[in-house]
Image (cartoon, rainbow, N blue to C red; front, side, top):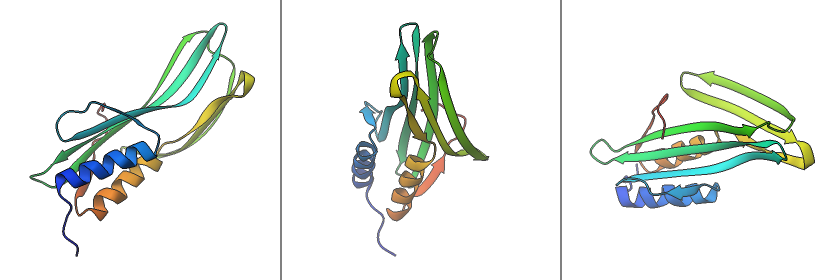
Length: 140
């Protein structure tokens, strides 16, 4: 088995992975990667709707564990535009998988894959020789 990556090397790899998936990184605390991306958006004269994906990865060097948190938030204001939403989900414990696709007035909308980024992080963490821990029910 290959030697485990150092904390700094894994932190850098997770930051690159986040940017590659389109997340805008926020200032995280020490030994943390945190980011957000707006995946679905629709506006019209009377209001609008946005669906965002937020995540954080906190590295604990003593345990060689990455604590991962994620949340999908939906915000609306005024009277949101009429939207056709197609969603398929499956839930096992705290892990939510599936996709959501919204189509709204004027070709607005978007697609969100609930598990693609989490799965990519889990693979990268395990390949680095660390343990992946999903902290469900907690905001990033």
